[in-house]
Image 1 (cartoon, rainbow, N blue to C red):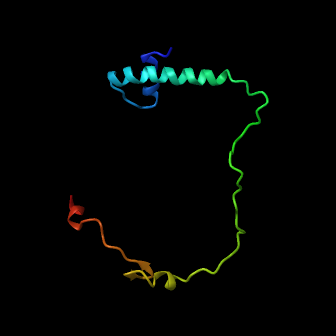
Image 2 (cartoon, one colour):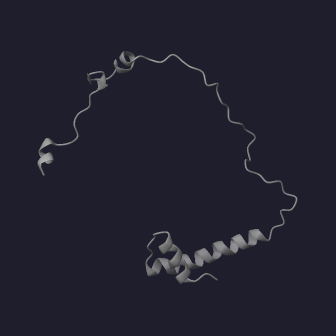
Image 3 (spheres, rainbow, N blue to C red):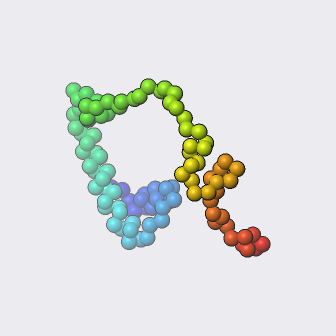
Length: 100
């Protein structure tokens, strides 16, 4: 059986903080999870083929071919405001804050 101290130790290693009530709640839950994992260890999988994908699909890749690229002018024609060939956006920094 896993102890509350072991749960607290693993939590500290994971940089998690649990209250005393949470430790009281998580300890039996973790004990059940560990017991279930133990039950899985008992299952005989000798003749079971390892499975990493349960659906019969394959990824479809396209050929890596050069396509026509848009010019800067074509890309910027729908932009509300430009300056020197770049997209101009509103400032998000208040100039008065620079002095502080």
